[in-house]
Image (cartoon, rainbow, N blue to C red):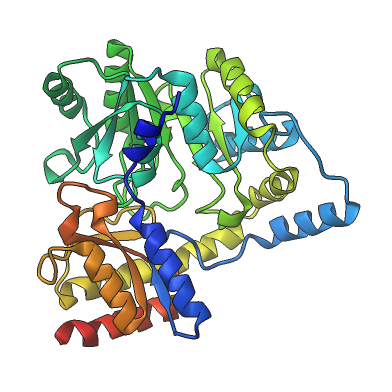
Length: 386
């Protein structure tokens, strides 16, 4: 399906460029503090590490079922019952090699080349890039103060009129990257009802669930069984490098996803599945980690406006501050590189998330250690004065 022309249309992911440059500087001995990538500074939960050590000592790791071990799928089902009060059949759950594999599987299984898929702008750049690489047409819908920084039926209807053709899919993130928007139950219900009425596939990205500070954290499964839900152990569970996630699928979609997963991935890594199952029981430890993000969030809400940045969207969930940096720059990429080179603070240019207005925006991650975030803010304060 993917052709060279599709690949050439993929936008660069500048956050990765900044991260690579920050890594080079850190390896060269510079005191780099990264606020560029959404990677928790905390380790994986102790129970996950202990489970992985035991599995390595046992030494018998191999392929599992393409959709993951029944044990982990059952544990995820139990998580939905405990956390949301929702019954999910383990057979509807597919374990994936990170949420990235989940997006690949969803786009391949649900859409044909040329189909239109709507996403919010600003939004996670990998959505746009994966969709474009697979020959799908990206429909970016403005998410701003007028619509609560989220997708709405009205916004989607306007987008269809503008496009002159039907939208086949809608991808919503809540909490959202980079805006921090938490889409509540009533808004999710309205969106799900609109998609059902228009025969639009609804995909809900819930990888930042557990990291809601303001508002109502609701899974799309609470309002519809037709949604495809994508989640991950990377963020709340602090397991980015383990590359393990999951999906909840409508019952009639499971076999199609399984066949594609068998061909592309064989199976998710067994070691990561073992660790992930243990992590599901580590909420007490993880809530302590979450408190450190809350401390960082409060600091940025206070200090960033004092430095001259305008908070451009809610910081209700996830761990990002998305800001208007136009007082300082009209080229967010150049600003990010200069800040890293001059004061060893890494942040992400807004151009990644918004190809129209992002040249004057920046995203700061507050997933790091509070002491590091404080130091970064103080460096920025002195630098911006000059």
